[in-house]
Image (tube, rainbow, N blue to C red; front, side, top):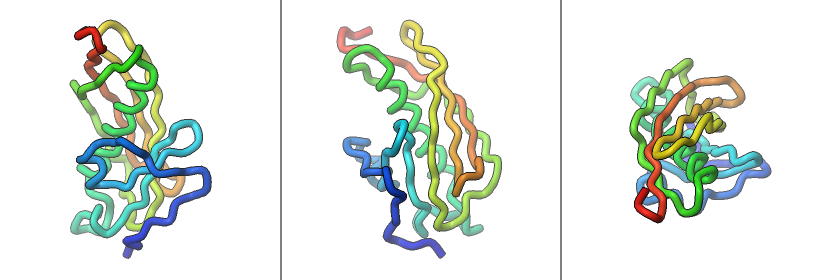
Length: 139
């Protein structure tokens, strides 16, 4: 079974201000190149002993939203419009997950981005999303 106290690879630090919901499923960490990481704990598991799909989708959603906000102008906020998540393999208990994002395009009020999540270095999830962007001027 997974450890309930996550050990974190060097170069990662706790992700601050991720939001109350993400705090419930975390702790999430941010590492080199803004990669988001988390250790799969017992509470993240489904009945089969692998990470629950909803937990993985939450990780993807948080990583994509953070990446888009970082590339958007000013103090923009984001909201998920569409999230397509493909589960490629089981992510086992105790595995270290890393979510890597690529913002494809930000145009007007929409942003398009991709995310790949690896479990101990093997791709487990691939996702594509569209986010709405609201800027401080109400746009």
